[in-house]
Length: 136
Image (cartoon, rainbow, N blue to C red; front, side, top):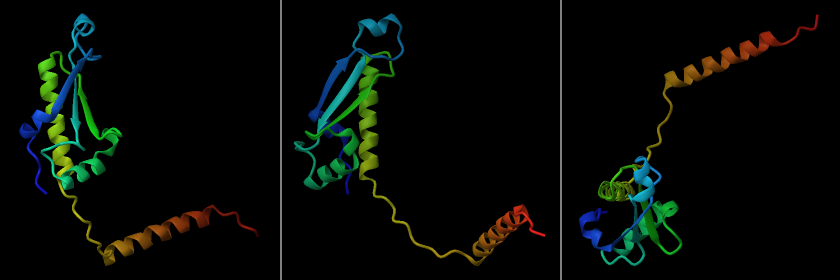
């Protein structure tokens, strides 16, 4: 599945700002440096239905009931840096969501691993045996 480019999706981003709790001293109390990115997955015109389903499934914890993906950045002191950071975070999320997971191939245990397992079980059994009380 093709990963949509975020520079195409920027038109559908809604940015809001708020007061940050990050570094900055008095600056934090005066400046709205926290940036919230909202992206409406369900009503996106640039995503296919298949891509929407993948995002809704894989990013369910970050998407509201209305189908809006919300991300925030407040680590930097400036609003512009936080805006760039939240866009980068969005790109990373999309890349991770659209990267197919590699299926695990079932393998049989090797002869050496079976022997090692049996050896440790035997040692454990011996240890337990020596701890038992003797009835003479």
